[in-house]
Image (cartoon, rainbow, N blue to C red; front, side, top):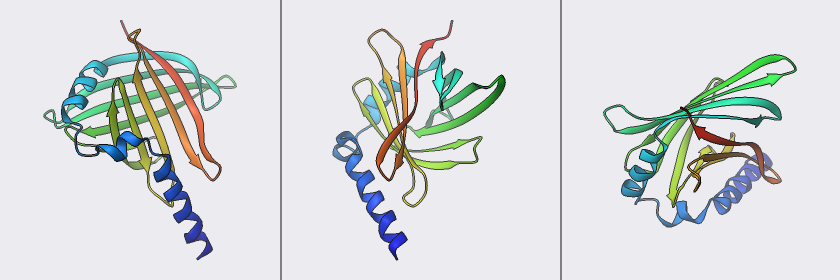
Length: 169
């Protein structure tokens, strides 16, 4: 019972931490989503630090499955003391909706709740009682995309990845 109570408290804390845009307009993403996703479409590259290791990342956004979804293919190649460690994830964002899902090489499969505000896409992924995280994709004025990922822990959100992507040539 104590475990259930702790999980419930963490879930409700997560809900309070969700950006207001998700709670404010969960049923109106279509036009803004399409415009933002069209700007994201293409191949993006980055170098930086992921999971505490030097990394090279690739992000590819496409329209997929008869334009019913937007798809992201995300790859991070990390230098783990001279050995390459690779993380690959695929996300599907349902067109005209705030719904989606994510699957990755870690074996994770997460439902996603997404909001679109200005030049940003923010996603809460995971399920209460399991792993819960937040990812933001922000189209900056310089045309680059900043990606920031957090994981929800008992003490609150902890950032584990921040990467600045440039459009690949």
